[in-house]
Length: 405
Ligand SMILES: Cc1cc2nc3c(=O)[nH]c(=O)nc-3n(C[C@H](O)[C@H](O)[C@H](O)COP(=O)(O)O)c2cc1C
View 1 (spheres, protein in one colour):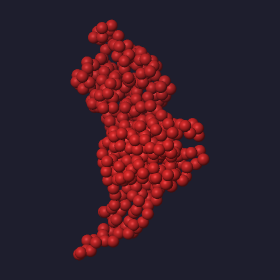
View 2 (cartoon, helix red, strand yellow):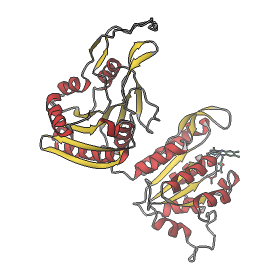
View 3 (spheres, rainbow, N blue to C red):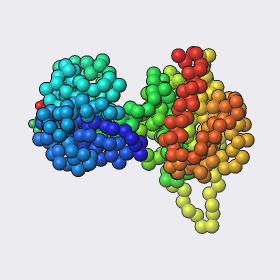
View 4 (cartoon, rainbow, N blue to C red):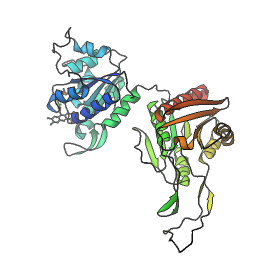
């Protein structure tokens, strides 16, 4: 329940993507938000107010002359206790109206009448030619300058049969963006590189050695970093997880591939967070063909050392202190002792310890932060909550460092 207690005004303008607004509305209420839907006249041609009323559990406003509000001023009443206004879909026409401060229907009027502290988020949705039209682009630029958050659009196949930019973000991505809007932007302007998941070291083309890491902790850290305003690159071992919205993901399989991908991406990063459970050893001589089962025999597998990604990057830290390196350690016993020792051995300012069998595959975790002062326990919580706490801790530490300013 990421939006408990939040009041969201969901505005629909006239576009085919109104069907996605129905699912978005459902998602918002499932996350605990109270949703007041307001529709333009054109929007009611694409989806009925009845559907939006059923999904939001509230009567929908479509008309500025609607007498249901006692003082007949819905444009004021609806916005005064709102936590955010989300226009989804936002038509080319509605973008024009926002850019010019038009007040010729209820939705446009309430956007102009909203208190300045109420964030306005707009999700454009239109044909590729409408989106790339210089007039639309001029208006979108104006919205950005006015502090309106533009969500998307995405590229792809469009309802009209054409292909290109202009698709409204998917409801799940919209939801992530709306949740992110309420998170403090403690990492604005920072670039953060994160590794996540297990590695897979092949024995032959169909078999290999891996571990039980699901990637959930690393993906949560990537999402939390993005929510905090950072530009995030996620280098991921094999997982079944969806990429957090707005995060650039690079897929790898082996520890060596992860090392190579990290080396390629590390320049210019402010923070490196090594969450991945990287195999310490790989098979020295993986077979290029499937190893055949022989009567009574078992194959002999020789191992060799994998690169230590965290220690390699920590050793590269520049005079300016970049990147600030954070490591994860998954232990099965003696966490406090092993965690403190590992931080020193790796030469990093912050290490996050957790117990392998309490985190791998789980939605919740308990973590211990080790730094030069000692250790702090962050009690058991869902991984996104812990990831947000971790990002906040990292931001406090790097913001103390004047070279990061
Ligand atoms: C079938 C149909 C589909 C349309 N789809 C879109 C669309 O996806 N995006 C858009 O910006 N306009 C679209 N339009 C045009 C808008 O509906 C039109 O500009 C309308 O005046 C917008 O009004 P509003 O901004 O007050 O909601 C479409 C029009 C029709 C007839």
